[in-house]
Image 1 (cartoon, one colour):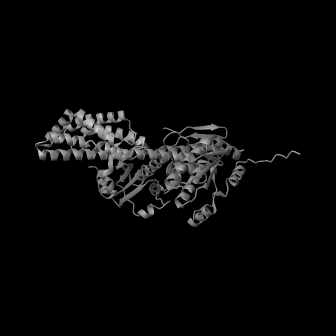
Image 2 (cartoon, rainbow over the protein chains, first blue to last red):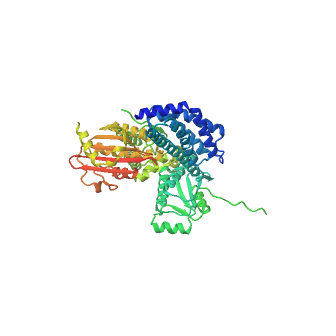
Image 3 (cartoon, rainbow over the protein chains, first blue to last red):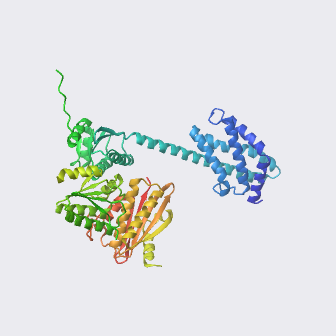
Length: 289
Length: 118
Length: 155
């Protein structure tokens, strides 16, 4: 029998017994996933039905080895959808892959009946189906991970947004406290944000406070210097504050040139300097007698 | 030939660069500005680059040269509105624009010039 | 085949060989006049936007392209630029190759030094472009021509 013949025969078999296979499959799944109520019964049945229909159509096309083929587009899309839904709901990847793998048993049972007098045919068909469902199961895991990765990336971006607060201390004076460990990639993004905020607020001076930064390495120090240079090119100036003794040591040790950058130990000191530079002074009102 | 318009406001010359300049156009601007400083007796030049999303070494040099020539002619130059992405790129490129004053926007640029002209 | 094409092929074998299989959608642009440089900037910008490079990365790439294009015209006597979109697995990037049939660069080390210039410029074109991009390669043959290839990957 040629591959196409097998394919046609398998496809026909599934089509003829679709209802039964579907029922057995659902029963399997309900037994397996009794602990997780992530997917409701109706949803589960819906998924099974959709999958079986699409699966039947796809097998008829004859491409049983290659799930990337056009004929499997609908099945893959469906699996992506099911996988994403489950990922967002908190299912484990195994749960979702099991959804596909558990179709094997009902299918094998029916294959046995259909190929009762053809041992070799049965072996071939079983192997083909097993292989096919393995690939589809693995596909769901890949999609699952992709969705989770996207969620992680989005959360990272949100974290990044949160960690660059801007405080307007006075007219034309901004304070930008940096919080957390700065790696090279994050520092670049943070620096771009700082510059944009300077433009948005029209600040003359930006005080970059690094009290909340535990360590500074060469790359971070370089990025800081570049940001200050860029701010100056734009027409603003920067003061670095919150330099703790350890960081001061690191900076000197790394040989970073801070000659023409004003640095202060505390934000308060930096604020005073910024006020002076913008020509503002603070006068204490006379105490009431 | 296309030219970038130069506006006069009293002692001040104002240029707003809004097109992606090719090298010839940049050179023409440099020449025009220098001429106008003399012919109009200008004391200040304000170059607004807030619409420029690119400043490469040629344009950077044009700006530096213009500022230098202006200084020789007793006029001050201020460049305003540099976009953050452009500033970051110029720093990476190694272009310092030495001797060129900058400000965040036209208003601040005028304030800067005002302090020094009068 | 034009002389420029020959040069491009010759350099292609040496230059960033491993990028060969990753390139798609090549656009080739002539570099002879000032307007060509402006057009190149526009096209490079579009490519960068198409793969959603950050604004800063876009600017860096277009600036590098502008510098290299100018070099091609000023020192190489004119030439061509090839723009490619690169795809390596899930990673995307933009690759640019600048080719000319000019006199070549006799001393690359010197040429790559900040401030070195033979044409009265700022001497930042080559070294600057190298800093602005993620990958940089140059192949120059005295008397035959020069090819410079740069890549900017999406972070």
